[in-house]
Length: 281
Length: 209
Image (cartoon, rainbow over all chains, first blue to last red; front, side):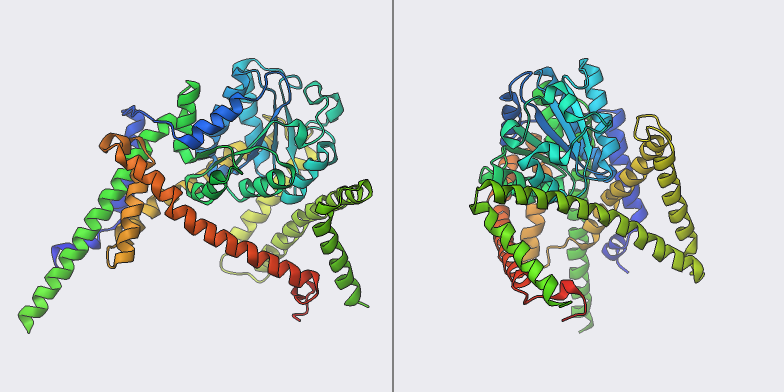
């Protein structure tokens, strides 16, 4: 076995160790790399900026599960901070069964930070099963789908929802999703009802949504932790997204180095074997 | 009758959902509203179906003393515990309740950890499998490296054209491929829907015909 072959068959635990180190080190020694803002993120920021203060609410759908929380929770916090700092009312809901506790915790955290009052500045509609049916139903009447909020208060008794009937009364909807919910909001809220929809999704999902961005079916898009970091830069509140960028940078560079080394070893090994075959012949 | 009635119902409901978009009359819209409420109620039963199915599978594993029945015990115990906490503790969803504590301190870290492990396996797989063997694989490899660099701040620092190239890859070749796939999927969905509405495709009725 030549040196290239040995390198290609390196114990994968060494790779795991390298990845672990590359993730952890930047948390102790931050690189503080500058994050530039891309157009899809800027567009979502601008769309939220246009939502009137103390008026019709922003609808924020926290449609993610704990698995995608590290990427999507920084986005939801940044969006809530932006909305609350502009005095925009926010109605939070979730269409993911595991999203209830996650939605509640970011909503309460952001509201406590900004001194917002439940019912007047924000409210939580809770969870409803039946993705497409719920989205379509809200287009007819939000109260058909959510007759009361997550805590049992009838929607008619929540001051910030006075006069809110359907998508006509919601200036912007943003979904944060780690599954097909973002597409569903576009298909069932934007297409039939003309609702402006923005999305925040995991990095691997972002490529799926570029067609909607290009056609204007999405007003803006946050893709992965990078999207969260860009939004945090825009609102001037760097947090978990910006912190995570250092680790993500080092991981991506490490993976590229591993790919290059793997290819050098592969071609080196192939050349060695050809030389040996030639010598044998 | 056992076959004709569901087929007729499917035909009428499917046709109605398609044409209601074009009839803004209040009677049609009221019925559409009612159908959506029925649909939500119906879909809520999927959770019940899922739970019953989960219990049945793990019950059978335990009953037949399968090798990995230990996991089935854990699954059923966790299921009963969470259902119990949900049903029998007042204000079960309130922050700090036992249900919420279990969710925030057990389910959230477990799921986040499981997903995070992907980074390790992706790195290992990239090292072993990402080879420039052919022109296609070389293109894929180069595109992947550019996108990986362009999606992190270090890409900007290495060269300002890397984020530009990343955007081009995402907005031109990626977009073209995605559009092609989506149009294909859309046409497929339309064809399948029509087959179901017209009673050509009957697998949903069971029985395999």
